[in-house]
Length: 309
Image (tube, rainbow, N blue to C red; front, top):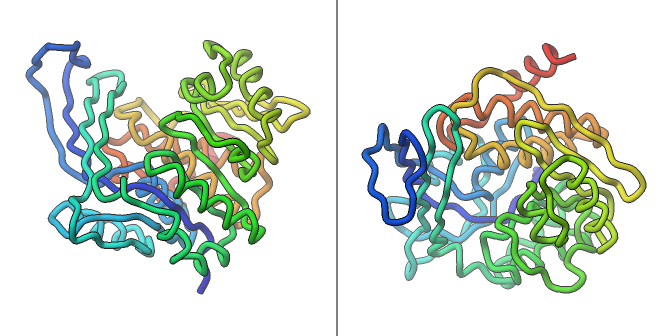
């Protein structure tokens, strides 16, 4: 059966350290906790989409090691179809995550490992799955050439495309024209547009500038506790935030939002409804520690949406 959502991206093992505050350069802190688990934006988004109810395939390159086994377990548990390449010559990637107790603020360093060797040829090898999907999602943790090939193949097949431009990088000319939806956070919107973003009004200007560069349907700037801002080239719409409880860990919020958004679009939701679903997905996720482990089930998302009406 075809997938609702196909995601190209990175899987890494997350080594997460909790501490009273984030360390300064050159400083050593005593942490309050440590976990080792699955991560990588693409993998997290695939887990989020699958948990939210979408038949989800995930394209990645991983090693043949203990970290790869972590990926196999989380995909199996979430119901993700792993369309992965297993690289005998490279290690599975890893990420170091520092999470501040109390606020949930985080700082992250990623070493992509095998995922850094994803190629356009890998994308072509999964062409049938991509063309048959309803929604195709990618980010910028893997090589840009692979992301661009993925978006091009999906766009030419009439598949709805989402680019989550994280981390922000210089994009090839015309790449934004392959994107139905672009979903940067404030920092990424500023880096891509050149417009300083310190408020929702600034986010509107940055989104309008990115729409002018060729994004097809809408730019959606995620604003953390302030919700999100969508610009469709004609007007801006603010998507109100939701709360499911105190924020414990925000490191998976963006991935939850993108996975939930893709799942809702794939089932045919109107964009405004899909954005509310995405917002609720992220709101539940931040009340839990971890990234993939924080992704909510479809019934939990529906429950928050019912309360928020």
